[in-house]
Image (cartoon, rainbow, N blue to C red):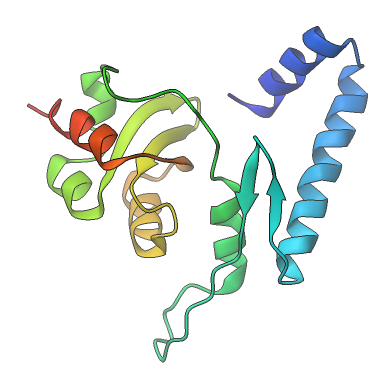
Length: 157
């Protein structure tokens, strides 16, 4: 779902103007970013938890805190169970099976310029960085159970 689609759905359910909804969403995004930049977590019940994760490292190529903020704000809260869901073969082809198994990540669906993926560990910055570089798409990330992951992995031919 794109920002515009979200605004339209909120508008249809609330009667609030598109402009007011857009301003509210932008304010929410700015507040979350400010809180994360200040080192504070943001937890909104039934919506999502946003956390900045820092790792001590001597590696000069390590991910800086700013990209981690970007990655965590893309984590989404989707409650639908993936067990029983059939994934389009073209979508599965975006992430090769050996990569999906290695990083414990599976593609779920394409959303315009983004790819919704499910991961066992949504804080695996190495996997996220690799996938962003390999597939050259924005990633929308959701967590999944091992059972859900295995169900999707079985769909690779």
